[in-house]
Image 1 (cartoon, helix red, strand yellow):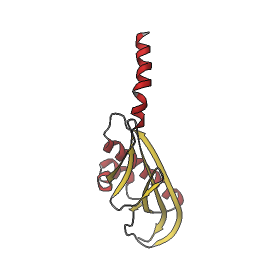
Image 2 (cartoon, one colour):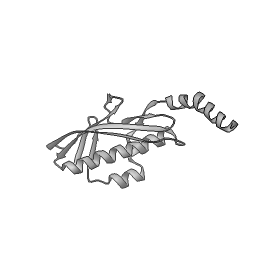
Image 3 (tube, helix red, strand yellow):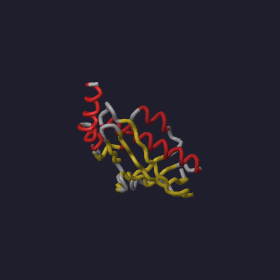
Image 4 (spheres, one colour):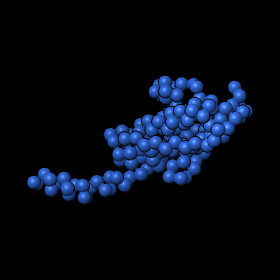
Length: 145
């Protein structure tokens, strides 16, 4: 009975503040994309262009698409969790590009909590005690290669 009472007290007093953390940080695209796992799963079937990075001429535009992913951040550094969930968001954009018939996603931007951020070098991630999230938006296209 004492253990149950202790657990209830901990939930009431401590856990709400643990869930409240929501740190928004900026992380390097190069660091995230240079990891072996990223190279394996993203391959080279779809090209990715962030912010205003130059790309070949657009032949067909299929539309703008958003990817909003979350992951378990428990017992991981914010950087580890954010790079992992970033990869998940990138896989989602890649799958959409393939589904639509595109070979590239251009103008990729972070859109965390509806705040749009464009960068050629970084992405934004929100990390809490238990969850990390990345939201990206980009335009699926077919470009001349």
